[in-house]
Image 1 (spheres, rainbow, N blue to C red):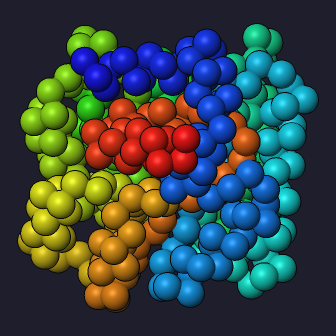
Image 2: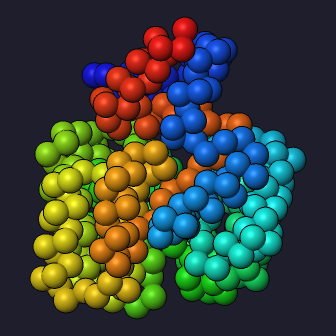
Amino acid sequence: MLRASLLAAARSTRMRSLIETVPATRAVVGRFVAGSATEDAVRAVRELTEAGLRISLDHLGEDTTDARQADVTVQAYQAMLAALAAEGLASGADVSVKLSAVGRSLPVDGEKIALENARKICVSAAAMGATVTLDMEDHTTTDSTLGILRQLRVDFPWVGAVLQAYLRRTEQDCRDLSGAGSRVRLCKGAYSEPESVAYQEKSEVDRSYVRCLRILLEGNGYPMIASHDPRIIAIAEELIAETGRTADDHEFQMLYGIRPEEQRRIAAESRTMRVYVPYGDEWYGYFMRRLAERPANLTFFLRGLASKS
């Protein structure tokens, strides 16, 4: 019930106005969001890289219905990639792109515009030695995202996909995307979805995650294991050994600000750990989904507000 309420609040303009106007909120959000500006993100990338971690950057924003704003988002990614390259940090970096942030939600030719804008980001990433991963959004956009992915992979076969284990369709999507060279980030999922398309109980989602992960690890692609759950990570390590995977043909991923000690533990074992680093002013929807994912995050938020009020 709490998770559903928080996810509903993530799309509430009234709640957004309330949360964003609380003076202490920004200080607490800083745990999960690197900052507003490009230089904030570069600073976070430098710190993580020096600690032996890799990064995936997300310029926050979604559900854009203004073509000019979609262009601004593309330019922000291009500026970020250029800034990383100038600091010698672009090679091996990844940028995560929500297609709704680059035009898919536009009322006319949204998919076409999103494809063109995503292609621009891919061109810039390729020039800097970086990669791009298409973030997945709610279930109504899954087919569209995978369709755009297929078109981008014609010229950029390294473009990554995100699959969400709570969706009932995901096992088949994993089979379809488990071929050679296919980069797939497997996460549990962070949107409010109906029972007809998504598992509702945590135990069901966990079992689906393990089934999907086995499919990816037994395939020929490059699985990206996105989870903070200690039990899931332990199971993943067992499956990695069982399937004969080596340290360079898969990676673990976690979110900026969540379980940093575990991130460094995995990296210290000469395994690839990539940290998902969000930045920008449009942090509200992302932040509310992080609160919905783990009660501990909500507790941290409330304590932070109390201490700074």
